Structure formats: C-alpha cells, structure tokens
Amino acid sequence: MIKYAYMKGDMQMNTRDLAYFAALTRLKSYTAVAHEFHVSQPTITYAVRRLEAELDVQLIQRDQSHRQLELTAAGAQFAVHCQRIITELQIVQREIAALKTPQIKMGLPPIIGNYFFPHLAPKLVAENLLSRLQLDESGSARLLKSLEAGALDLAMLGSLEPLTAPDLDAALLATHHYRILVSHDHPLAKKKEVAFKELQDEPFLLLNEGFMHPQAFQTLCNLNHIQPHIMLQTSDIDLIKQLVSQNAGISFLTETALTPHDDLVALPLSDPEQPLFLISIAKRHDHLLTPEQKKLAALFKDSF
Image 1 (tube, rainbow, N blue to C red):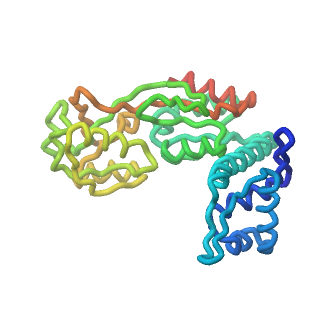
Image 2: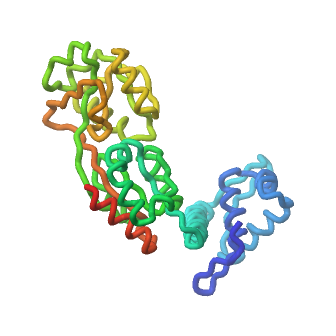
Image 3: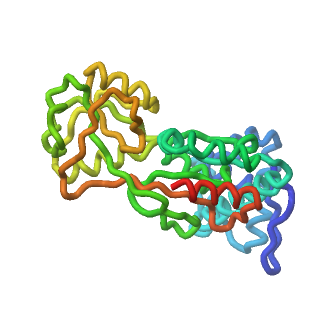
C-alpha cells in the first residue's frame, strides 16, 4: 500500500484514504471495504470524512432508508481522478523498483517473437541483454493493456492501425498482410488467392481475443456482410496449424505467424479493402528508458 501523501497546491491527501474511497466506489459497501483492507468500518468512514473536509464537498449520498450508498455528482467526478492518482502512484513504485533490478520487462507476442527473435537472439547475447529479459508472451491486445498499466518497460505490438495514443511512444517497424490458411487437401488449395466473401460457409479456427486477429476477422466480416462459423478460438497457434493441416477447418493468420516449415497453403486475400497487421515497438510516453532499455529498443528496431 502506498503510504505517502498526494499534494497539490494547498491540498494534501493521504493516499490510503484515496485507496479506501476508490474501493468504496467499486464495492458500494463500507463493510466490504473494511474487510478488503483488514481495518475497522469507522476507519473507512473517517477516511471519507477527511476527503470531504479537504475538498469541502459531499462525496457520498447516504440513504439510510434503503441502506444504499450512492456517489454525489462531485463524488463521481472525484472517483475518476482518484483512480488515476492511485494508478500513477503504483506505476511510479514499479518503475523505481525496476531501477534496482537488471531485469527488463518486455512484451513480445508469440507471433512476432517467432518471426524474428531467433535472428535477434545472438545480438542480445553479445550485448549481454538476453539474460536480462523478462518476457511476457501474451497476445498484442493484452500486452497493450499491460504496457499502459506500467507492468512492462517495452512491448512489441501488433495492431490494425498505427498506435497514436497520447500516452504512448510508438515506432512502426513493419506492415504485414493476413492470409487464409488451408490444408493441401482443401478445395481452396488450388487457388492463387481468395475473396473473403467466398468463405461464408467455411468453419474457422481462430486465435482468441488476446490477439488482434479477431478484430481483423470481424472487420472483414463487416465489410463483406457475412459471418462465417467460428469453430474454435484458442491462444495456441501450433494447435490451429495442426488442425488446419488435418483439414478440420481453415484459419485466418497474419503472414508473420507463418514459417517455411508449415505444411499448409497460405492464400492471399483478393479483397481491395482489407485490414493489415502493423508491427510496432512501444513504451509509455512518461517512462524514461534506462541505457540498457534504449540499447534493447535499438536492436529490435534494427532487426526489421
């Protein structure tokens, strides 16, 4: 728990009081908040009163008849800023703690990692960086949330559009296409390309919502006014490829995920309008990279 005070002008607030209030807006119960923090219920009550006195406004609307807890308009507004303050302080704690350890927390989606990491590994070893990497190999959608929350120092990310959020610094490194994967025995295997509209009756094996693929897939569905059957969604890329090779269904994957060893047919889409798989390296705008992190980022950029 953060124990220091948040100060602005003549205002001083104990961050523990802020944490109590944030929990109160979430749980809607003094008793539940007291139980979560292992304190007495009056402790929570006094914390809210201190905040109300500091702000000179009522934050909680107390309805004794219905025993309901509701935020006033001021309380709802304060709750938004309260959570932001707590989140920022948590990020500060993690970043300062990270300076005490040589580990670099890096987000690397398996699709992007498998594509170029084997070629980059010798350079990382030569720069004494490989042993310092603490990798999170989730999909890009999850890694973006982790990066924004301050849980990662850097992340390689796949996206459908350039990453332009004001709280991120991102550099676009590559643009790849999506492919339709079929087995050699599938009737589509003889084609040189395929229009997405032709695939309405095909069963699809897709990556799950932790990846960008479901968004790209749905974009194509919307553009073509069709909704093919999704037979399976998983985070296991190898399982998808194996099932496709057994003709259990077809798949939709970025070309980044394909290797020369895949015994599959990868068909380009002939659609004039289609989503792309953008590969970027990103950090939070307010995160100051250490010399080692800067060196790591430069190596990743130079690998494309």
